[in-house]
Each structure stands twice: as C-alpha cells, then as structure tokens.
Image 1 (cartoon, one colour):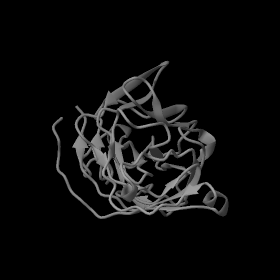
Image 2 (tube, helix red, strand yellow):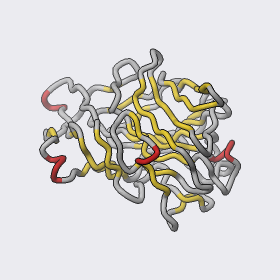
Image 3 (spheres, rainbow, N blue to C red):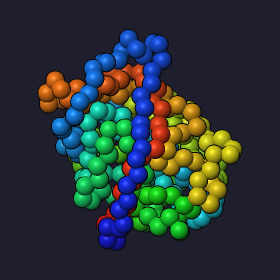
Image 4 (tube, rainbow, N blue to C red):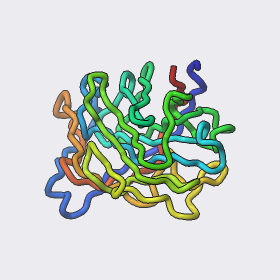
Length: 245
C-alpha cells in the first residue's frame, strides 16, 4: 500500500498522579523539548499500549482490528523502524513500521488493519498493517520491539468480548498482562457502534508503573515525567494516516 491521506486534530494528554506517586515524580517544567527518541534510542517503559480491540463486531476482524499507543514522555517519539508482533499459532507474525511515524508528547497513535474509516468501523488509523498480523480473540498479545529484539511494551490478553475494546487499567511496563485489562463499558462507542475510544481518553485512568524518563538535551527542555507510578489520563490526539508496506 501507499501512504494515505494526512489530517491533524488538536489533542492533549494529561499526566495525573496519586498521592503516593507524587513522591516518585520528577516535577520539572518543560519549555521546548528538542530531542526525538527513535527506534535506536527508545527504552522499555517509554511507550504505553493503552487499548486494543481484537474482535470488532461491526466489521470483519480483518478490517476493524486496531490498537492504540500513547507517548507518556515530554519529548517526541518516532516509531519508524520499530517491529510490531503478535502471535500466530506457535510462532509470531510481525511487520516493521516503515518511514517516520512521530508521536508528540502526550499524543496518541492508532495502528490498525485498515486505514479506511469507511471500511474499518469508523476508526481514524494512523498506520495500517494490512494483512501482516491478526489479533486473536483469545490468548494473544501485541508487542512493540526494536530490531535487535528488545521489548519496549507488550500487552497480553486471554479473551476478548465481541465488539468491546480492552482498556489498559494498570500493570508494570514493559509487560501488561490480562489481569491489567478491562472491557470498555457500555455506552462508550465509536464509529459504527463498537465500544472503545481509539485516539481518545479511556473510560478510566491508565495506572501503569515503570515509565522511564527520557533523556533531555538542556535544562530548558526537562519534561514532567513519572519516575515510577503514574495515572495516565488520556484525551484527544493528532492523527496522521499511514499504511504499512
């Protein structure tokens, strides 16, 4: 496929903390971060997978599967060159994100099977993987890793309800397990009516530990980051539609 249409929308990502997390917070105000983390500099705990829908009901799985990434840092992240993996039988299937796919601080990126919102159930997809992977409805995972095999973030699930996304509610990065997930509740719909919030706030805060602060180039560029435990309150995002391969 070829790169598709681009469009921008304002969005925000807010970082809130519990009282216990405040002691672990590095509270330094940010001016303009001047660095971008890339596939060669990203560390485990510097990306969050916040939501995934393995079993859409309004369209076929091959068109409507997607998952959502968020950048919890105070610097931009370029996903280009990272490898996305999922289970296939006893092995894995994967694709490499081609070109540049930048998530600004606090922004979201939605990766899905199909970038056409008229065919995928009404999702604005930033990067489409086509038929490269498929998300199983039970006992599967999505993993983001570097080319040399370092896992940056992984979400495992044991089952998925038809038409409901799985929201990340907790866990410790880089591995989020099935017990850290919950179905999107009734009434929170997108597009044709499946439950989920692609590119927007989950129905409840994402409380994950293990976020690793990004390096910063100068004092004026320090970011407000969680040094361990943080509640990630997710809101809107800017979208850039792309396709794999």
